[in-house]
Length: 179
Picture (cartoon, rainbow, N blue to C red):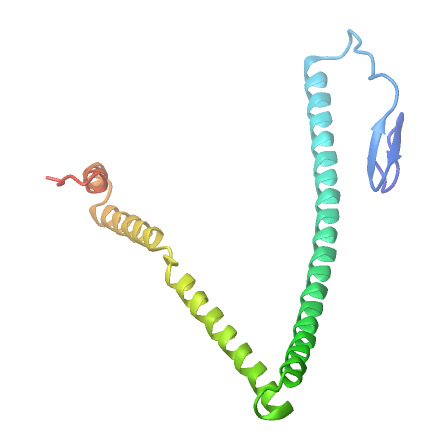
């Protein structure tokens, strides 16, 4: 692709910077050397890779845009859900007032507030139970610490002790005594 925006002979542009050759490939004449053919193949592979990367960028850009729009729409849905919850709380309070809740209108709103507080406490309790089940990547931290210890031992023992340290580590991982 010589100058910026210029397409090689026999090529046509499609989309942003993508092009396709029209027609048949150049005929292989008997006077081209093996080196020329290999260079042409390398050039074609390089060009194909550039086209593939360009296509991947365009597809990714489209996916990111769709994800952004979806995220904005989900945010709007969450906002609308909160508004609906507030309106339902008002309806609940006025419904309690209509059936004669103790304390009048303000008492009905207090009952609504108490109901929402109990629901929030239950949600917090469930969230705490779920958080307790997180492992905190204990196994990963343990294996990383073992790997670091193995590397330190190998560094301290130098070149001669690497085989011994590796055998000890394999035995320790397998659960067998090392010596």
